[in-house]
Image 1 (cartoon, rainbow, N blue to C red):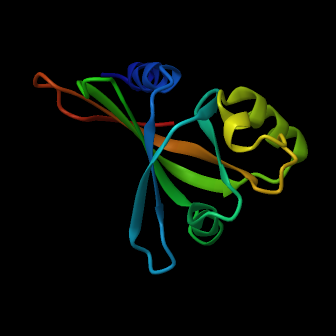
Image 2 (spheres, rainbow, N blue to C red):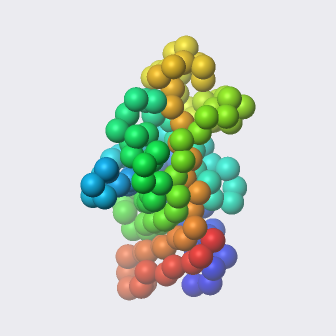
Length: 143
């Protein structure tokens, strides 16, 4: 599978809008993995997420920006893992765009993108790995 095919496969899984896994590292460098519900994709592969501004993941991103996201099909027959750097988003225009782009954000942050609890983070992928059941070996691509 060539680089563009790996990226296209990853984008297909991201655009499907399913829950995904977001991994960060805690203050001791240990992995912290959690399911996330909503995201906003900015091409080519910057994924924005909404979360509570006081959450552990936001503190972890600030101190250890290395992160990983995993997207999958409903039956887990295909999986894409994105590895890169996460950051806390502070720019008001980007926060508004992320808020508007994530269905359900208003359910958790009813006061809108200016809600003090509304936190946004982005993860910019530097590499992607795709895996499919049925004998396909994992294929990696630098982005």
